[in-house]
Every structure is written in structure tokens, then in C-alpha cells.
Image 1 (cartoon, helix red, strand yellow):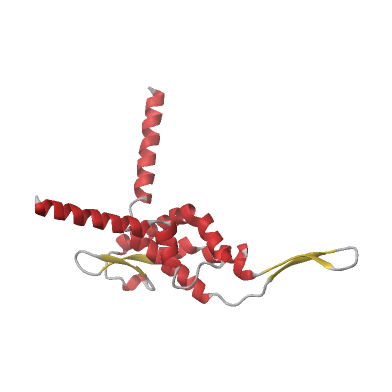
Image 2 (spheres, one colour):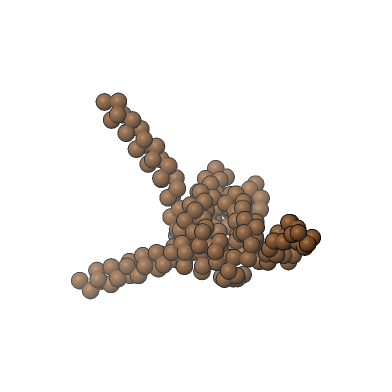
Length: 187
């Protein structure tokens, strides 16, 4: 009896947690908003010197160690991704028309025309989604940054389509919906 109750409680906690993580309806748009914030980070990057890791001296008094190009360093990856999901708390959904919404960056929460409580809930949702997206893609994405494969203007394609597969999912869902509509009309 006690084990059954414990299982029920654990299941309820799991359902509540899972529903909050998966509450982003349009993952493609959310992923693109995250990619846009990463693009801003890339554009704001200032040229940096190489990282000098030559801190040891050999027996002749010569410095030993590596000189690492900042562009391919782990430090650059950390600086780009660190705090990204916290920055996503400045985003919320905004209605474009009756049927569509877009993720926007909010500069002043007091100037919002929508419910502030609802807007804050959306900002927490995208921040949570960002955390999950980075958890799924961080290793591969980090390697691409270090290889120099990520350029300004390409973050959305790499993060959302190649690694996250959110754009493909949306395109397939649209194609399946169109096919179902055509099959229904022809029947």
C-alpha cells in the first residue's frame, strides 16, 4: 500500500515536471529565438588574444605549454553559452494576429499590452526549453564552435535544424497535415 502511494506521488511529480518542460507549442520558433540570442552574442564578441597556457619553465628557462587560439577555445564556448538561458527570460510570446504568435525580446515589462503574469510564464517556459535544448545539443554544438563551423547567420540552421531537429519536425508535421487534407478532399 505504501509503495503504491509512493509510486503515485512520484508519477504525479513526473507529470507536473514533464508538462512544464514540454509546454512550448512551437519548438521551431522557440529554438530560433534562442538562436537569435546566440547570434547577438557572436556579433558582440570582441577580438581576443590567444590564450597563453605556457606557465612552466623548462631546465633552460624557456616557457613550456600551449598557445591556444581564442576562437577555438573552451573558454569561448563557455562565454557564449553561459547565461544564455537566463537571457531567454527576457523573451515572451506576442500575438501577431489571432492565429499566430512570435517570440519577442522584452526591453520593458511595464510596456507589455498582454497579461504580465502570462508573459512571465512564457518567459520561464522558453528559459526551461533553452536548458533542455542546450542539454541535448551542447556537446555537438560546442565542438562545432571550436572547429569554427558556426558563423554569424548560421546559428539557427545548425542549432535548430541540424542538431535540434525542430525545424524538420515542424516541416514534417506540416507536410503530413497537408497530405491528410489532400487525402480527405479526394475521398
